[in-house]
Every structure is written in structure tokens, then in C-alpha cells.
Image (tube, rainbow, N blue to C red; front, side, top):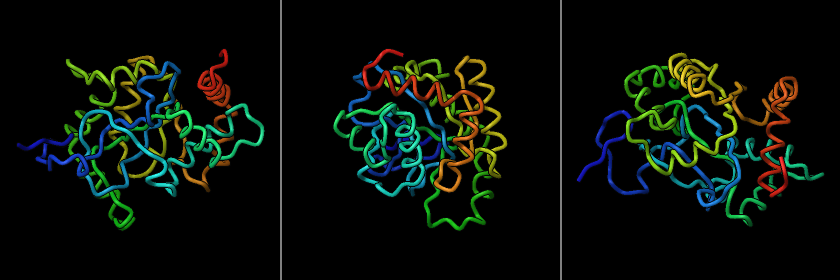
Length: 226
């Protein structure tokens, strides 16, 4: 039996060969707190992206700059003095849950072995119809959305669109903005979540009041009032 990825191509059926289009941590699906959806560029993997939800694990990719930068934001706005990225990841592990969920703008994987000069070409080669299908899965615009993705998306307080000013995201970025506006889900556009970009990202969040939104989500993750 074969399966098809978000581009419509046949893919291996083994779970290890697939990358879910919507990622959550641990037992987050069973928790009540609100979520922040971070939509990046594309997963840095040599795997097919498949519709549906699945878990991510900081421990499996401890040096992933994208995940670590997102965790760093959670630490900064945690309300706990001195909280660090490493410490907030330990808190998430202890809670078996996290307020950060992830998705990507494109339904392809580009591993870190892909030459940077090739990335824009490969991104622009993704058919628009495939992007439309992928983002419909992520934002539950299908007639029969995935129940687990739908349940997670219902808890999303706001969305961070990360790094979509890069070449190759002209179409997917426009589709995302149009859908989020139609769904009335608040969103903010930032530079790609990466260490050297963080000062500018923090300034942008503070200037527009998104730091307060982030802090509100973190307080409710800890079980406090908004």
C-alpha cells in the first residue's frame, strides 16, 4: 500500500520516512492551555511531508536553531526570572507538553546538505496546487480536516510567520496571510528564528505588543490567569 505526500507524490509507508505537517510536543494534545503556532519555511529533513499531526522532540534535535530560538522566546516571556532556553526545554520535558506547535510554509523537506544557492530554485519549483493543499491541511480548510490538527488549531492564540521574506516564499506567504486574515487568527511576521536574528525579532515583538501576547500564553501554560 502506498501513501501520498502533500505534493501528491507516492511516499514510503514507514512512519520514520514521513514528516507530519503539524508538530506538537509530548502530551500537548491532552492539555487545555493555549498555543502559539510557529510557521517556518520547510523542515530541514530528507523526508516527505505528510498531512496530519505528529510529535516533535527537542531531545532528538538538541541543536536545532529554529526550535531552540522558539524555546528561547518562550523562556524570555515565561515570567520566570533567569529562565534560559535549556531550562525551559527541561520544563517542557517535565510537563510532557509545550505551548509551541510548528508547521511550515512549504510541503517539502530541504536538509542541511542542500546547497544554499539551490534552495530558492527548489522552493519555487513546488507547484502552487501542492502548496494550496498543504496549507489547507495545516489550517484545516479541507471539507474533512484532521481531527487532531483541528483540535490543536482551535487552541492557537496567534501565529508567528518566520522567515518568509526569503526568496521562494512569495506565493506561500501570500496564501498564509490571506487564510489567516480570513480565519481571523492573529499573526506576526518576523525574520527567521535564528540566533543572530533574535535581537531584531525581540525588538519587533516589543514594538507591536506581541511580547505581551506571548507572555499571556506562557502564564496560562504555567496555570496562572491570563
